[in-house]
Amino acid sequence: MPDHEAGFPRILPMGLSGLLVQFSDRLEEDANRAALRFWERLLADSVPGVEEIAPSLAGVFLRLDPLMADRGAIEARVRGLLATKAAGSGAAGTVRRWRIPTVFGGAAGPDLAAVAAA
Image: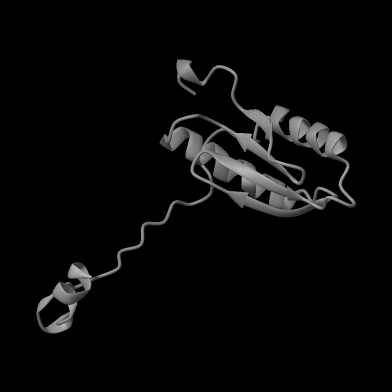
């Protein structure tokens, strides 16, 4: 990670039932790949008390079961996973580029002007 990434990854509380594992405070390819790789790692390594794991552009959100989750134990488990070499470094899986053809206006979109005006 670049020099400005000192202090990352970091774990931030998100209300009563969430944790955010943040890999950067900027939107960068390295941080995105680290977040996706860590998300994949969390999916493969079931963490008790975690109801949902959602990646973002530079982090991973863990939604905890507020009645069953032991936040301290989950944070310790996350720190342990982050400490492993494969947790947040390198490329995440295979990168796929999707190309979706689109047409705007003309015969394919006769109501484009009306929608844009609205």
